Image (cartoon, rainbow, N blue to C red; front, side, top):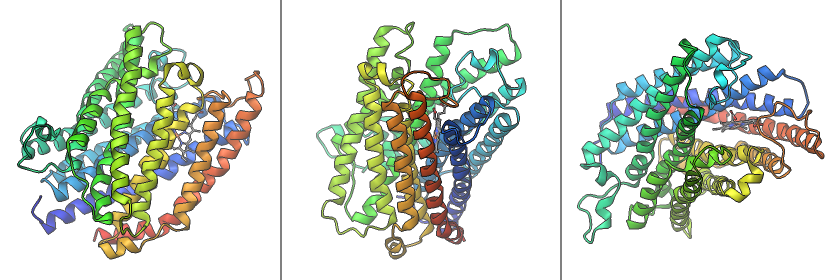
Length: 488
Ligand code: HEM
């Protein structure tokens, strides 16, 4: 445990409050882009397709980037104030780079109309494009800046942890696998952070190579690359990033929930085995995105299915079991913080289950590229990661146990959960009715009643999104001022 140093703690708090306020501003703006897309699909108004795809690109990149950045920042705060000394100057540098990268993406998509989607599916950014050439270059450079920020931040945390705990094997908890008890206890947040950030670091490096290849072609149009290789690279990067975001949040729930249940949530052999499994398999699960690519070796399709199951099921089952042990008959005061963590775990389990269903080849043949896909990842992002973040923010905004126990999940919280559930349900129903994903609208689909069903579900989803925004606004009422006060 770190020795208390009030000045250092204060600097950490200031930085995390800056991150928090930035998150609280960007998040509803990105939701508003989603609302515009849903209302366009619902034919409430008409946006031209070029603008729709620019909004979709900014929304996808923005949400994934903002949520990962914040989940890293929260880990940086918790680890840096409780376990080891971290370099706060580097924390500010990461923030600055993320901000610059984000501004670049906003300019590229809103002014330059860059619209290739988050995955920049090669050679899409260079062939028959509807957007300005400079916006392709700016998007690539902005993503490189974001990648450098995340790489620096993740390397710093893992390096500092390895220095404190001795070695990589110690960070992964291998000392728990022997017959004797380890001499030094390994906090669960350290194990999960390592199991998350090391694969993330590898994915950032692959992502950087992918982006540099794209940048080279941007400047030298005669260059071409193997599209299959680039598709593998971008999905390794993107899939890992989104998964790791969830695991970073789970890491802090392992630390903060016990403060409410008054029960330890410690590392043991089973926890070590499950997170080591996640560490390995998370890197191969992305193959399930390429089932439809007939040129991909078939063995990798099988590997993708096995890795999808192995990367998610053990860690989820062990965590859910741990969660039940935490809350069963615990004398817990159900303030907004443990409630957000509990429902966040449910969102993770439900979205994760829907993802595993979709990663099953025989089912993927039917659900591939339908709205089932955004349904599952929006579930564990919106009702998983975002609930964990809200729980963390309420924790941060209140300074002591009494205050934290007193802040009840009120109208704003339940409005948010209700709106988000309805919004997600419309995606799932769309998937079950074969409504395709990434369609600006469904007017051109002349198969059965897919057009009418898709539009109706989208319009209804738009209503639920407005409820989500109202819920957030109500919560913001107290959250903003409390957060700012807590940083003083
Ligand atoms: C209430 C909040 C949200 C709304 C209204 C919303 C709305 C949408 C819509 C309408 C789409 C396009 C779906 C399609 O037809 O394919 C979409 C795609 C997407 N959303 Fe969201 N979303 C929300 C929250 C989130 C969150 C929390 C994340 C976090 C990662 C996220 C990440 C994405 C991504 C990555 C895509 C795919 C973009 C692409 O295919 O290039 N969204 N969202």
